[in-house]
Every structure is written in C-alpha cells, then in structure tokens.
Length: 187
Image (cartoon, rainbow, N blue to C red; front, side, top):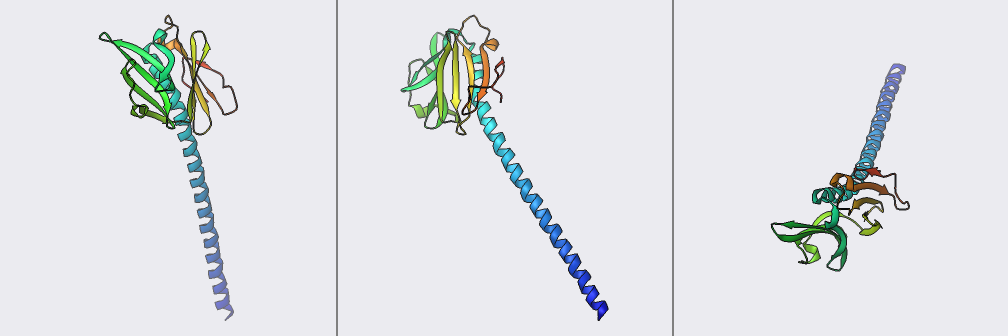
C-alpha cells in the first residue's frame, strides 16, 4: 500500500509539474502576442505618418518646385497646388483634406471636381499649410494619432528639386524634431 501511495504522489507531482509548464508556456505566448500587436500598431502608425509627408515631398521633387508650387484652394478647402504645363495645357495637382482623409486630384487648372473625387493618400485629421518664410511652405499633416509630421517645400524657382525639400516630425505638443535637408520625415 505504501508503494502504491508513493506511485500516486509521483504521478500527481509529474502532472502538477506539467500543468505549471503548460500555464507558463501559455503566459509567454500571450505576452508575445501582445508585444507583437503593439509593435505592429506602432509600425502602422509610423508608416502612415511617413507616407503622408514622403508622398508630398516626392510630389514636390517630381514637380521640380519653384513658382508652380503654392498654397491655394480646392472646393473651399485649403490645398497645396502643383501647377504644370503639358503640351500647352495648364494642369494642376491639388493635395487637400476632405472627409477625414488626405486626398490628391490631378485636373485641368481651375477645373474643380467634387472633393470626394480625389484619390485618398492616407487617413488624417487635417492638413495645415503656411508660409514658413518668403520662399518656404510648411505642410503639416495632422494624423489620427495626434502626431503632426511635416515637410518644408521651397517655392524658389532657382532651387534644385532635390534641395527644395526638408522634412521633420512633430508630436502633438512639440514644434518638431531636428530637420534633415534633402530627406523625408523622420522621428
């Protein structure tokens, strides 16, 4: 009988040890999933923040900067305007905020379609455009996570397109991180 009790105690001990191991494995897995989700969410937010200003910076480089870049209006909304002449016709690309999204539309100059006709760039709370100096436009995208990435665009016709873009990043309460010449936004 004593031997049978000892055998039962050994079995209970092994099962208890297995249960502790199984619970530990589940806890580690749950922690890993939580960490992964946090990292994935931060990466998505960072991607959206960078995409907004990187897209605008690329558009400015594509356009070549200069006199064809200015702050204008599109359907009653403040808009960043890139003008160009193609085969004798004047066209404009308008980047504006409408219905919780940063949008872009390419059309004949002064041919205003409905604002919802623009292609969605990213979801955003707003778009702020201001003249930072005589030849510099500060474009700030107010993201849904309250961050405010920005890009500075040169309106100087003599500036090289690659040199006419300066990027940065501002949290909801700050004025911005250190700027980088010729780069896109950074954190």
